[in-house]
Image 1 (cartoon, rainbow, N blue to C red):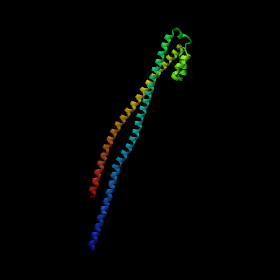
Image 2: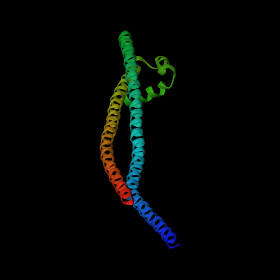
Image 3: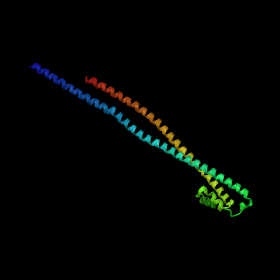
Image 4: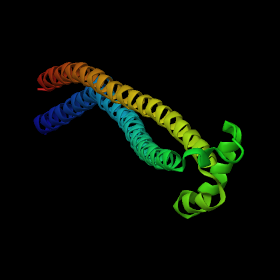
Length: 215
């Protein structure tokens, strides 16, 4: 009768109140998620992506500078080898000049420009053109060419030394920048992590409070 209807209405009211409270709880939890947790996750994902992209760029810069240094050192080593060979050829021709005596002075003397031009022409031949020059040129001419070659080789060595120094400097700069940026990012991530924990704590406190109110 009336009591049953009254009881039934009470049950319905209770269920309705629970549903309303549950809806309020869901709304509160959703707000907590948007205000705190989601923001932290989005920021961390964005920062991580940026760091990874920059990391690749900085690491590539180090690798490229190391390769440049390696090539510069190889050229420097080759220039030193070429200088050694040029000096050995000069010493050999100087000995021939002493042995030839007055005969070494026979023939026209060449200026530095002509010596370099003829030396370059013969250098394309096997063995640097030494055998061919010995047959075509007198000792005096070959000596002039040898001296020019040594001078050019010495200039080449100095040029490659500077190139190596510049390459090493760029590599060291890239490494220092990489380390400094890594330290800065580590500090930034530490601050971000601390802030993230604060946001998580606020979210947890808000969740507990919402459930207490729901109960």
